[in-house]
Each structure stands twice: as C-alpha cells, then as structure tokens.
Length: 620
Image (cartoon, rainbow, N blue to C red):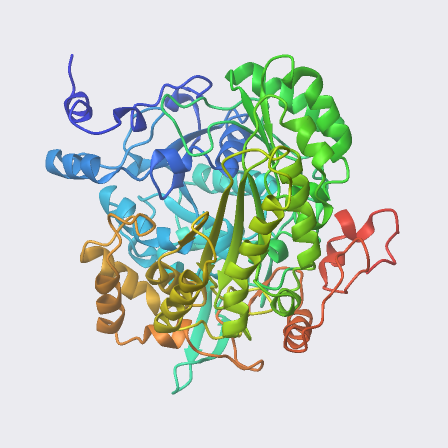
C-alpha cells in the first residue's frame, strides 16, 4: 500500500532524510513504553546526524525500558511545503508517528540562528508555540545545549531548560515526569515545580523580569517559592565513567561529520577571552586512553566507518594523547582507517604526532591564530606567539603538507587597522616560510587559506559587556584584509556580517525578542544559517515592528553594574573573574592556562577535573 508519505518522499530531494530505518537505529513498540521522547534538532538531517550530543542522549535514553527516544529534525523546504499541502504534521524518524502526542520534546540549542526553525517546527507539528498556551494535552517542551545559558529570547516558548551536561540530568527528569504522568498529568505547573528541584533545571515562567525606562533590565526575581534565585549548571564529575554510546546510527546519505567521533575530554583549560565554550564547559575533564580505545573499537566495528576523529575543544591538550594515538594506530593503520585530530594548538603542535596519525591519508591542517598581531592575541589571551605559528608551519611544509588554513576574527575588542592588516601580513610570512625551503625539497602546489569571521560578544565570557562592531565597520575591515593580501597564492574567505550581526542580537538578547522571532517566522524566516533562506531585511523589519532596536542588543557597550539577561544563571565561573579578565584584556595582560596556574575562576567548586589534577583540593 502506497501512503501519502510515500508519494511525498518520491518528489522531494534526499528522501532518506525522512525515512529512518538506518543501521543501529533503535526500534521499540511505542505501546510498551511509558514515555515517548522526541530529540529535536532544529536543522536539516545532515547537520543533526553529525551532532555528538544527539548520539549520547538518544542511545542513553533508549537503554531505559520505560522510554522510547526518537529523532525529530527540521524538514527541508521542499518536504515542508509538501507536508503542509497534504496536512501532514511533524513526525519522528523511527516510528513515523506525528509528535503532537509525544510526552516530551527536547530541543538542542546549538546556535542562535536555529531559533526560527524551532518556532517553525512547533507550528508544523500544530503545537502552540507559546508555553503559556499549551495545556497538559500537549508535549512538554524543553531546551538544552550552549544557547540555553542565555535562552531568554526564546524563554516564553519553552516549559523548562536543562543547564549544563545532560547525561545524568535527563534520567532524573524522566523519573519525575513518569511519576507525574502516572498521577494523571493534572497540572503542568505542578510538574514544573517538581522539576525545578533538580539541580540545573531552569523554568523561565517562574521568574519575572522588570525593565528600566532606558530598556535595560531592572530585576530578575523568582515568582514561585520552589524556584531558586540562581540556577547552577550541571556537570558530569566522573567524565571517564559517564555514559558514552558504544554504537552509533549509520546514515543512509552523507552527513557533515561522516565518521566516528571520540570525545576524549570535555572542557578547556586555556581561557581564551572570547570563547564561550571554553568557560561554560569548565572544568576540563578527561577520559582514560583505555576507555577510549575500547569505545573506538566498538564504534568502528558496529558502523563500518573508515575514519575516526578525536573530539574536544583542544585535542592537543589531552594528557593521554600519545598513549591513545599509539593504541589507535595498532588497528587503524592495518585496517586503513583514517585518524584526524582537529582542534590542535599551535604552541604544542607535534609533527611527529601528525606523521603518525596521518599515515593512512594526509589531510589539510587548520590552525587558529585568531588575531593578526601579538598585541591583539594578548588581548584575547590566545597565549601563542608569531614564532609558534611560523615554526609550526615550517615543520608542516618540511613534512610535505601544503594545505594550511588559518582562522581569524575581526571586530575583536581594542582592534585597530594595524591589527586587521596583520592578518594578511601573517599569511604572507607563512607563505615565505614555504618558499624558504629549497625547491627540490618542498612539496608542490602550496594552498594557504585565511578565513576571517566576525567577532560576536557572548554571555559568560570576558567580553560579554563589549559592543559588537557595526556592520559598516565589519565590511570596511573585510575590504582592508582583501586589499592587503600579498599573494594570489593566498585565498581569503570571510563570513557574512549580516548573520553575525543577527547572532549578536540574540546572543545577548532578552525576553522581549521572543515576539520578534515569532513575527519573523510568520514573514517566512527559517533556516537562517543557510544562505539560500536567510533574509536579513525581514528580520530587521520584524524586530523593529515589535518596538525593539537591534543595535540595543548587538552594538551597545554594557557597564559592569548593568543587570544582564543571564545574571540568574550560574556556570561556576564567577562574574568577578570575568570582570578581572576584561580589565586584563584592556591592559593587554595574559592569564596562564589552568595546568600552569589556577586563576581562581570559580570552577574548582565543582571539585572535578583539571582543578584537582594531582594537586588536591587546595588548588583553587
């Protein structure tokens, strides 16, 4: 029997995005479970299936006999239009069932430009977008991930948020929900009152936000006796012992990261002042090489992949890296499995390591100097020198590598035109190192790419108070780089400043933006991270239609005593520390990384990871 869905799939691009049934996907009898859970990724299949967090939560929840976790992704435009035409609602991949009557839908919030897709997915499911309009007959909607640390622009959409790492939190939530469901689901507010007692759960409707006449926030106060004044993130203290899936779904089609990903550590010890991930995932915690080797063999054998990538914020800082790579090479080299090491630091780069791990296939190397001058690298606390950069690329060129990418940012705090021109100048020095090698000794076809993105000030960083450069200023700096590229052998790419500007609006936004997001979706906005869909003018019109000024959020300097939209969230790293780091940035003073000296950021309160590595509890 040919169904409506079959007819639709025959007419859309990449129908395997919607069929499910991949190898290692979990199939259960939905009538035999108490909780139906939809893991919602607000982007297309290829992006969603590359996300490590999805793999962890999906397989972890499906180890429970009482829960069925299924995947729910944003359909591409052709599929969405066909679904709306035929009256189909948003459905899950495993069962094909519409999600309207699922128990819980959990959205991962990985980037601000996915907010419009969240609204569009709920609309496609025919679920009321606003939490206040959803009764007990609708699924509970929650969000988690990095953007949950300031989810205020979408706070009115969600019933609650999970702040921090969800491996333990998700199971505690399932237990509370199961008990509430067995009691007859009488009151959603009663459920939320129970959930808020779980550490790291934030219920936005339990907090009132008052504003000053100038538009800044006057106060954020709890309106329910169960709600804490501040909500502290959760971390997994024993990262080596926590759940990690030993099986993964193998997609039918190609996805962005089409390989085994091995999370070797979580967190970062470096303290780059612009990097939100480096702070919200503190403290750094590692897995043992033996644990990782066991996982690697299981994941490779169950998937058939021929490549494995080590996942972390700074892979070369992993203390067990030599032991792990030696262990991996014992079977990857024999089976012709490629091994890639992203997120390498320039200051501890090892050619010997790269030669070992790239025996199967030699890929390009990416480094991130971030800034074009040493002055600005000190401002952002990058803690690398130009000599580090030059010596590393010299090693690469002598080792036969000719494909090098250098990532930079423009618009960083205190940046001058000399700093901007330093970007192409540094690329020119890298090219000089290549030509300094005798012609008969160097590999052919040098390929140097410099990529410059626009700096976006993020919450929970030293630069959270900083004004973002205007679009006009970013365009001028992009041109300045292009005009000063010293050779045609250097390729220059840059990110669209319009998407960066909108990201800046939402990154430091407040609850008043929620209405603007819904308005923009009604105007047709969706898939804003995709160039073929992004419509900047519609967004600006929607924001201004709601009586808001986008520059108020993106291009305005904030004072230290201003109440920030995320001030009721506690990530462990203190505001006092961020103020200190901002002042150090202005003084162009660097802070050493956590293994050299504890900076007293506050993360030692978690009593885990690098804060206590071999030094005991008196470290921080």
